[in-house]
Length: 225
Length: 101
Image (cartoon, rainbow over all chains, first blue to last red; front, side, top):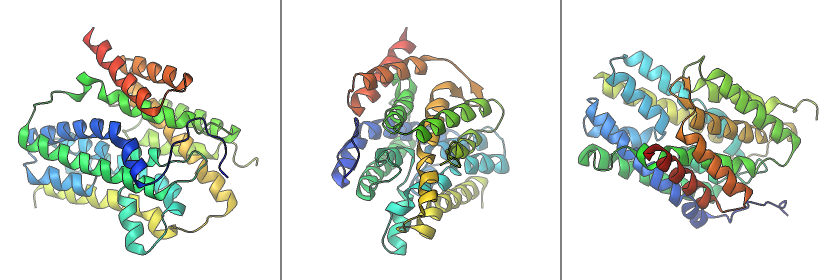
């Protein structure tokens, strides 16, 4: 039996799709703005679409096209993007026990993990639901891809997603899911430490470092158990 | 190969490897209890970091802007036990309205 969860959500492929619909709107809108920015920064039509289909993580993609577009050079762009993507190493560890099956099944499912699908499939007790993750991941993948195509081809019909407040949708999602997890002292300690580390490092380090450093906060309270 | 395609190739490979490493190496296996406790605490730590950076940072600067009010609206929804959708929509709406003013 699972523990009582005030914010418990149903699980499964369909539920994953359903839970991610509001996020798909936001992710699709940012896909459009990624396509627009990439096109404006000399990435052409095909490269941004290929990037959305393979890289599939917005922060790294935005970093790549903005740094290259601003003349920052290939090295700087790649380092920044890889630092941002490195958070998927600890995130991948958290979902690994839920991803059973053969090599190619595990591999494909792992590529559908992004911040939002990971958050939606999180049960709140440290475990994850595979079908929920795949459903949410596929819906978000499709939104990101279609958004990118629309942005590259259609241009700027939507304007800035920030005018619609869509950039605030993501921290709101993460807050909802964070609150549903604060059931043990260890979880609270990890959350407080993780938030403080990220806050303290933001002005001091490159983007991406605060997040990866915050993952060390999972050690808070751990060794005393 | 142009810089654009090199970047697409390197960043793409990096992202794929970072995502796949955990699931491909230890996928489906039960971890030892101590490891489960550790990995279980990764989620709240990362979620808190996402909340903080998504709300209070712009590039490398700490900023206090409309997103903070949006997050406060989401917090109120959570306190009222509203569903996830309501919290997300409220955050976006309050942020957009604040920017209009």
